[in-house]
Length: 331
Image 1 (cartoon, rainbow, N blue to C red):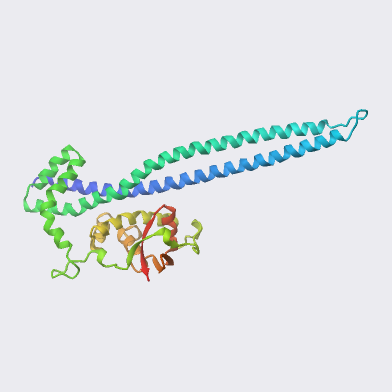
Image 2: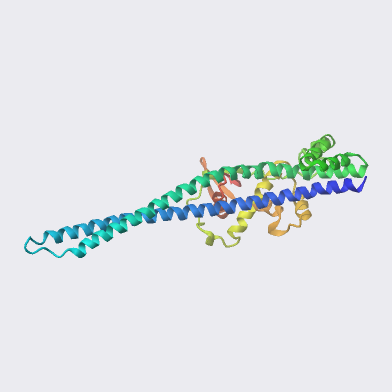
């Protein structure tokens, strides 16, 4: 097997790592932009409300100035006309002030309307990108991860599949990924069947994570009672910061995909080792946080759920717009 073939397989592994970085960074960027967009909308709402209040106050000042002027004019007679010039000037000034704040209120409302239109356009585009990152990218990563090993086995055995991949790479990434999938489907069919065997088979294969946590369910967040949550702001995050928790939830998306596709505990450990991830940065740690002993714990009460543990993770998931969350359910 030529050096070109080996480098081609290495390039696929580099592509896999690049896809993972792309997914992580894109998710984090989308979440950060969404927070900034919301802050901008909140500020615009505050400005609109401020100028509306100013309009009401100015209207009251015009009415008070006009009444004072009228009373002054009525207090005299033809022989002794009252000196009401200063009150007339006050009416003029109050009306000028009202016109000014009304103009400010109109500009604030128009600015908010224009920004909302741009935000809606952005959210449609961001939604498509988020769907791509959350659905298609993890599938591509897993296809590469689970199949590159088969290609390396081919290379060791002297088969020509590596040459197919090398040729495909010359025409672009899309052909490369297609070649990987097509070349290894037949060769991996027996391996895939073996991986689907239940835990404790005769060869002692490690069971998939999906079989290890029958008490973990994907729960709708809107069915969870968060009325007594102690989490109201970033200051309420102590053990783990809010930003770190956002990063963890972003990685959880990939972990969920991997678990659904049959990943094992060792696969997550190997992945972290291959990409230099350790401790809280590792995907295996994210798996333990959401599927291990300290998973979000809920008590089912009728059609809803009461929180036993996990208020902070639930608060961040809700902030990010998640509708579902994995949790240990106690009935």
